[in-house]
Image (tube, rainbow, N blue to C red; front, side, top):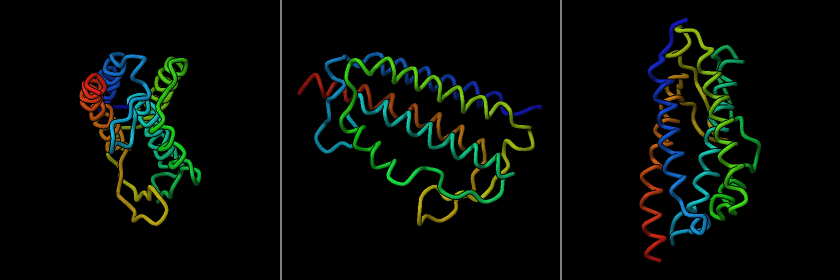
Length: 168
């Protein structure tokens, strides 16, 4: 069963980079919300965990449905709740739990990706990510790449926000 093991390794490296970036967030900055931003510093972890949950659900639905069309998988209202939690950020007491949650979610997605046959890795199917959206042809490889990119997007953002917090 050959698949893109390099992509799985990249997924793991991206997570490690994000975890290292988040470790540099001072406890006192976990609730810092830069004016105009959607996510507080601690809220970035809330957001990252939700994106892992969201794409994990999509991957599970794609595989369970035999790569047929997939509709929205998130419970109604969940995204808005998570967005609000991401604005609020984390209490210091929630930090460890959020990291443990990320590790578990990452492992779940990685296990699902690793279980795919080579013929399934690049196989696309139409996926509707949210109510009222058009289908977007998506493969497991796409999901792995998007998640890796997503981790890294917030690595850079976190460093910038820490500097903003220090200047505030």
